[in-house]
Image (cartoon, rainbow, N blue to C red):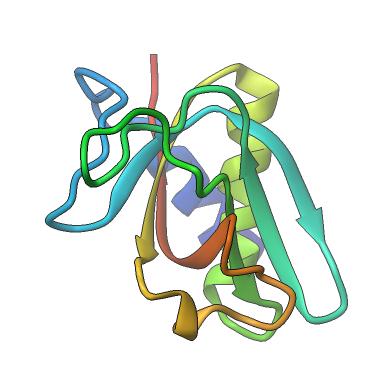
Length: 124
């Protein structure tokens, strides 16, 4: 498990950096500067600090700054590892999320949080 997780984190940082921090309304992806990574009994979440992309309507910064997944989801460990590594190395990440707030995990508030469905890091 450690070898696989380590490989996933290393591979994530070898992908090219995006040209800009833009919201992609086709796949619900935002570029994120990680401000916090948290683990709770029922979920993990990543908080994106200043920045975080553009709103789907082009009206400025995304109001959604928290991205969460249930602790039992296999993606949870990868999200913590990639977001933590990005914080340590000062690198952005890209978060793919479910835009529908009705799909949010418990504890992920509809006003500022969405279900995390993918995460990737970028190398220098």
